[in-house]
Image (cartoon, rainbow, N blue to C red; front, side, top):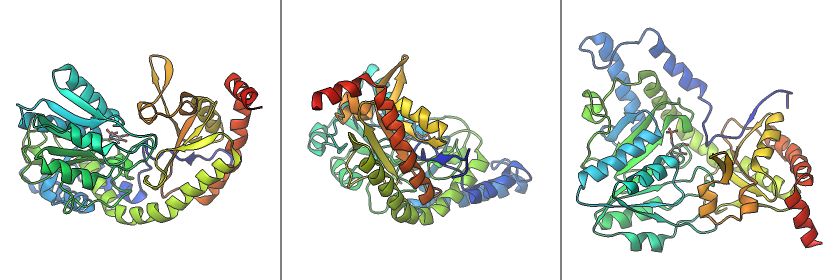
Length: 394
Ligand code: PLP
């Protein structure tokens, strides 16, 4: 590796914008600055390009272009879907979700709980798999919406969304999925999956930040979250973020190749990284169902070390990853996802998420396998918990 070069393994946080996407966006910062809503053809041509981006985004998930509404991010898509379902069913006061959702859904549901809704947070097991029996039992005639993520951003664990959607729809309940981590990594087809609404985000699939989309199945009762102009056929007010929408369309177009690569080459790189680290670091384990995960993600718990210390030392080596902790009120709490999975405190604290992409190379993986184990060893030698654990086992 060249000294000073960055090894980016934090792609579930955000991805590099593909050069082809940047190229497609550039004219919209320059000569193509018209407002797509304008009556003149200078603006109108931009509108036509937005429609082309809509078709490409729709094609990625097997949707009809009319079923795609562009938003500002995954969070807005999630919020829009949940509020719309609640408005459409004002008499129903129950929401079902899971304990491991991204804050985009979790925090909204917790907010709604304070305003009079009853929320069921379905549990997961030690491997991050959803308790389906619990989920189905929790559905009632008062349930307005079931909102579940397709794939977890921390563990990478995939929920069986197709199967769940079938069951939820049999009960006539609105089903929304936060597919922000799944789109671009897994094949998704809305023609064969009875999901009512699906959220996706540009910056997780090598598109730009600040743009997302919400799939709304034809016939789903819907009301806009952003009430304003007639943009997006009245489903989302506000002048369109044209360059980013064009970028999302181009990213969606590239995604077919990327999905293929993610599920072959990237999966192999992830597996090599995981095996290499587990083979050379003792007291290390993978968080999450090893057989049912996103192909790019591994969350590894290094017991008796602080994840933040690992991240800082990896940072010195130019390696970017994430920890399984959230900084709340100045203290480092293991994330709600790892806590919901029942990962022991000593392991959750030292959990590191590596999320790869098609831009990673074998050389980078070899570098991490070589450099990280001595870092863990050095940190453990400074840890009183590690010394105590060693005393117990000897
Ligand atoms: N949902 C999941 C599963 C995510 O991982 C993220 C982002 O990390 C979001 C929603 C929010 O997406 P955005 O950053 O586009 O608002």
